[in-house]
Each structure stands twice: as C-alpha cells, then as structure tokens.
Image (cartoon, rainbow, N blue to C red):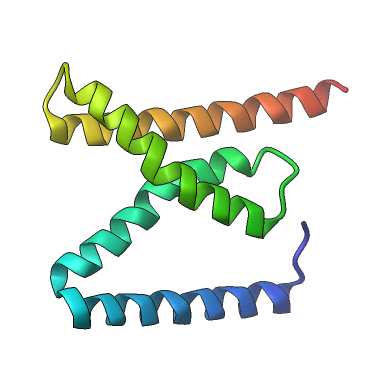
Length: 116
C-alpha cells in the first residue's frame, strides 16, 4: 500500500487525535492505571504489526490482527518465559524475541525478493 505524502500526514494526525482521545478517556475513568493499560496494549501489539507487515495484508487487517494477536500470544509467551525467570525480565525478553522475529522475517523477505 502506497500512501501519498498528504494522505500519510492526514493518517498520522487522525491516529494521534484518536490515541489522545482514548488516553484522556481512560485517564478520566481509571486514572494513571487506565493510561498504562492502553499504552501496554499498543506496546504489545507493535511486534505483531511488524510481523504482519511482511504479508500482503491491508492496513486495517494488520491493525485488527495485531490488536488480537498481541494480548493473546504476547501474554502466553511471557507466561511461559516467566516460569523459568523473573516476570519483569520475561516481559522484556518476550518483546525482544518478537521484535527479532519481525526483523528476521523482514530481512528474509527482502533477501528472497532480491534473489528473484
């Protein structure tokens, strides 16, 4: 998907406004804990968005699938790693593992395209 410069600016502004509205709403209802939860959901969805970027999905599909895969698979991986190490270290390790998978998959796909 190629976005023109004007479309990209509009997308960034609209996403920023939506994120700000969600953060304000969660702060009003739940305080700092609400903001932390929203930011955590975004934080754990990023690796899956990067992984899904390598496949021929539209932006909406990548967003929805990463929002669903993030809390489920990230939590599972963190729990499994938490059985053998500290839970806080397991959170960081799970995030690093998933980012490394996304980077490796991107490099592999680029290498595969260059070879053909």
